[in-house]
Image (cartoon, rainbow, N blue to C red; front, side, top):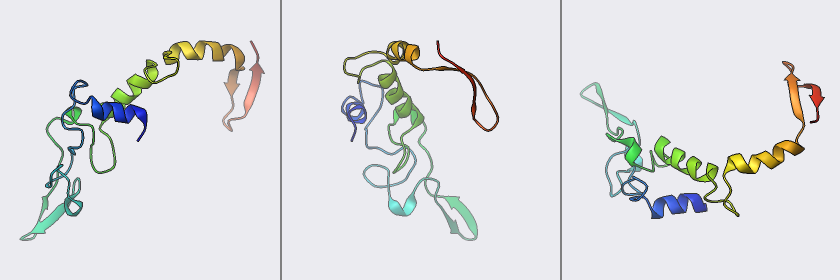
Length: 123
């Protein structure tokens, strides 16, 4: 597990999330997850297709969407921590870290449809 995700799980309540292991889209089991009834799984009963596992009412309060993916809210939280420099060493916001690198990289004035660089300029 990466440090950002570990911190998110450790401080889930403080970050506005509920139980860090409770799946948003699923059904059954301790963590709302059952391999037999995964997110959006259906079954046919009396000739009618029924939904067995659907999403929670408030996905923004969960870290895990299903057995594999994070929710949008969890991904945004991770993004925010990376961008503001919380997990950088030294802790420098991304916008500040890029200022120095922009002076080194060439500026590209245009790109053709084949993605070949045209008219590169250093400056």
